[in-house]
Structure formats: structure tokens, C-alpha cells
Length: 302
Image 1 (cartoon, rainbow, N blue to C red):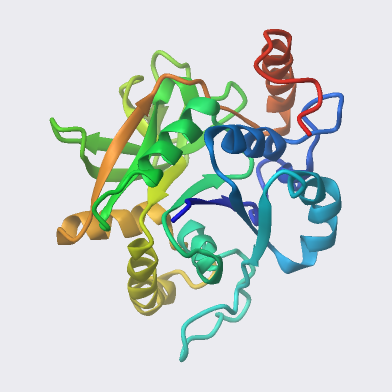
Image 2: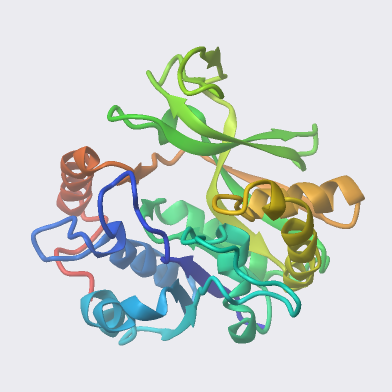
């Protein structure tokens, strides 16, 4: 079964100040997603699913999707607040999306085999897509998944804090845990994080492997998401009805703790580029211009 690439593009982009997914990153008007789709297709992916909000469909198709869809099978899934199991309702006043695991769940009807997951607003480098495709295309245990892990030092911005899942692994390169830190800052050789709004900071290993939501899952993982969504809605949402989020790493951690699944770390030294903040745009554009000059990418991808 050919692997599917699921691209999470429904985020609000609050720290960036707008829809990052639609922001041009080169003079040709291309966006980060163009580069990710190009790299994914070069790596072997032929089926892509974009998870978006239904109200942005027309703009997304015109701005990005129509050109990508000329080179692959591109379909759309719609993340909606009210897409919940029977018996559950959206808390009054809730506007925030439910999180990354819920976004992947939105694509459940379009996934018929192994699948990879990425963010739409991160530049990952071609190596990540090759590693994911090769892992998913190979025969494997139906409950053994993969995560492309970056060095923390290669994933930071000078313009503020970032959220990263810091990984621990055993001696065989199997993931043990993913710890979500929502506020990590540089410098690259001495990163630190805060859990109290910046009153105190704790250091992190600059070479620690981190998750950028570059996952490779067997289809069985959709069942794990479904099973744990009800627990999240019943246990976590009443405590924080407006902001509680259902994250992919949380589902992974639960599966690891239960012993039902395992995750292989696929390490990379590639450098992340993204637009967490609007001030990140110049550095991203400069990096992509250098790659085009080096011949990594053509001036126009499509």
C-alpha cells in the first residue's frame, strides 16, 4: 500500500500574526508547503492530504493546492471543532482547534495504509521525506512507527520561543518518551525552557533529539487516536475547556507506556527553517535562495 502524506495546515498561526501557510517565501510567490510537497514527491510520495479549515478551502486551493495537485493525488480533509465522538459537544466559547492528533483524525476517511504527518509551516529538508517514505514503504510491524528527530540546536529561532517535543530513546534508537515544551529559547548552543511564563529557565541539551511533528505511522495508529480521544474529552477538557489540546505526542506516549506500539527514531542533521514569527521570514527567504542557487531547487517548483 502506497504511503500517504498528511499535511496539517489548519493552525491559526497566532504567534506569526496570520495564516503562515499562505505567506510567500520566495519571489515566485511559493510558500513553505510548495517546498515540502516538492520534496515529498521527489522522495516517492504520490498521495497527499491537506488538513485545513473548511472556510479556507477556496483560498487554499487557489493559493497553493491547485498547483501542487498537478503533480500528485491531492485531497482535502477538514478539521472542525464539532467533529467529535457521539455524546460529546464543543464547550461553550471554545474557538481553539483541538490539536494535532485531532487534525490527523480529520483525515481518517482518506487514509488507507501507512501515512506520514508534517506541519504545513515548517521547512524540513528533503532528507526527512526520504527517511519517512523509505520507512513506510518497507514491510514492517503494524504497530511500529517512526519519528524523524532533529537536533534541538538546529530548530531554534532568534525571534522568540518555540514549542518542541524533546525525545528520549533507548540504546537501540527506540523512542521512550516525548516531553512537550511550549516555550524554548536559544541561543543554539545553550537552549533553555520555561514553564512559568519566563520567571525561571532550565537548560536543555542542544543536541537533544526533538520532534517537529515529522511522524511515520502505520494505519493502526488511527485506532489509537480514536480510543484516546474520548479519554481526553472526558478527563482533560473539563479542566481546561477553552484551551486543552489533543497532541500527537501525547497519544504516542500513551501507546509506548501501554506497550502496544514502538517508535523508531530516524535522526537527521538537517536544519529546520520556519515562520513561527513574522521576523523569521527574511532568514527563511535567504536560506531558500541559497538552496536554489546551489541547485537544490529550481526557481519554480511546478
